[in-house]
Amino acid sequence: MERKKFLTVCGTGCLGLMVAPMLLQSCMSTKFIAATLNGAFLEFPISEFIESHKEPIKYRNYVITYHEKLKYPICVYRISEGEFKALLMRCTHQGTELQVFGDRLQCPAHGSEFSNLGVVKNGPAEESLRTFPVEVNQNLIKINLS
Image 1 (cartoon, rainbow, N blue to C red):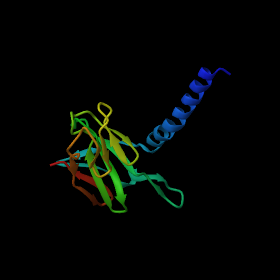
Image 2: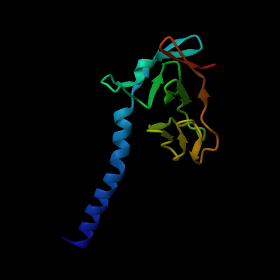
Image 3: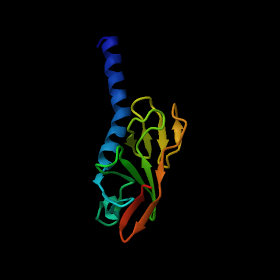
Image 4: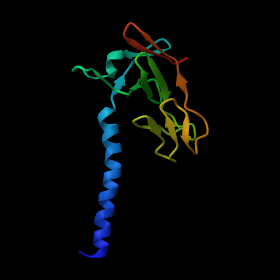
């Protein structure tokens, strides 16, 4: 095999090995939920976080919820059993809709990255994401949009 072809094949293979886990992780665990708007609250069942009902029960780390009246979706992270964090999926740099990759959100326009708590991990964004208070009430996740 020629040296140039060998380097091309190896480079493509290595790139595939690096990118595939990120793509598979985000595709497998992402769940989109059309939520109900009830006054100032966006609501959906807490059971949407259940990934598998088989013992032991497996929970999703996050879900993405949306409503037609909202310009951007909201990513809701399950931090612990009763603690949730709701983040507006709008980059604070120039307003591009973010993409979720496990425990981080990334801007496809300029590469800004945010943690699952909304904190800037990598610029050019300088401000944290907008967060919303989350309540759990009668098996409903209630996101306070006001």
